[in-house]
Length: 632
Picture 1 (spheres, rainbow, N blue to C red):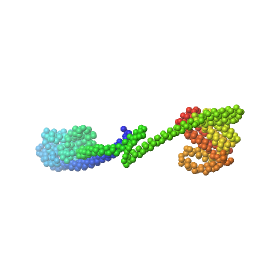
Picture 2 (picture 1 turned 60 degrees about the vertical axis):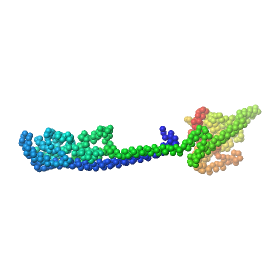
Picture 3 (picture 1 turned 180 degrees about the vertical axis):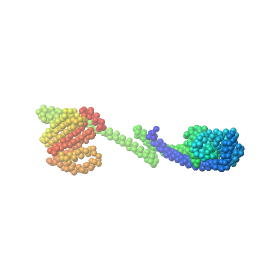
């Protein structure tokens, strides 16, 4: 349902509720967003502080291992003892080492102390001689000579440290308690011409991740290598995998690994060796757990307030808008025809004044309707009386025909023709059954008119017609040519002897009619003034007023110079544009629109020529259709 179909009251209530609901919703959203961002920043700061502690602890563990390897490699007594033991081992030939050769190395290894607790030290000398600081019972360590890292370190220079990372605990006695160890390897040489020897130092992986749980119980902290693989993690199953793989559905509920990572705040702290880093993942729920509960309570409180305020608002708006709704119902009853309905509102407020004005308007409308009915009744009676008083037009035509016959019987043929012309012209004037007639009939009517005019005056005017055969049946409005012929006779020829010629021709769908006389003609100024007066009928009021001021002097001159007809002086000239020409121009423009055009020509030798251009139509029905389609 669209808003436009709502009533006024519903629109008002909906707008008020939206004005109440939208600000509250935006306030909650902005408050929740800002609070979550603030808590996120605090969680990041807390994670960074935990990482600094973990970094210090892990760095101490690794530094301790590096110091032990340096001690073993660069201690002269230790190197001497290892060289002596290796020489004795080679001389024995049976793969056994003399106790006195083994003892100095073993004592040195036992004297080593390590930060963080237990550390496994393994020294691999060329030829298979191995020293450790742990029991090798049931431990065959010769496999270490075939480990992949041996091949990798063979290509590296001597004294290179290899960060092996996490591997399974190779000390079987401690494997149950410490399944994984973190190992680094240092290469060195006993003698310049011997193969490489290796110091393998390993710490139980628990020494690394115990700090993670101790200082960051609400975080998931882990040690990563440069390949984004986990070296140390509180969960043993996650070691060696990626961060995403460590967030398994069993750990995180129904969420899949990929989206679960987005539910954590990740903070990473890079270590200063081997490309290792410590990563902390803080669950968003843990960081925003308190605020979520607070926001939920706030939302519930806002909903309760919204419902309460909405109920109060709807009640108040209904009370305030009830008079307007009643007024709308009264208007509907009036629209249905019940003019006796009234609002009867009281009070001095806007609604009360509106109701009182509405009632007074209905009273006036009812009174006006009664008055109009009375006037219509009086008008109908007057029309009936007028019809009763009218003389039947056929009585006039029959009387004129009787007079014409009497005159013919007495031998007065000219007078009979004049009476016949008068009867024909009168019949054409009174008969309004057909608004359009053929060009042939229109010219015949003009000829009857000129016969009457010549009868009234001594000096005769000759009327000739030259009509193209394909234009005789063209339809045009009744009495289009008669006012133009009268204008030529009265103003062009000054009611004196002369000649008027009517011609017609067809071009495409257009009909051209020319009326030309050999009278006094018009100057260029007079033509401009005439066209200006004709254009007043279609010009905007502003242009008409400007042109009126410009042409007023010329009009005054023409008024002073118009010829005398009845009661005027001889030699005076009348306005060239009579009322008839203006009416014909306005009528044709209303019927034919922009297709109609009027052209005025006046040669220097005298005379005036009017050319009409209208659309040609053969038949009364076609003209009437065009007339109706034009909305006239």
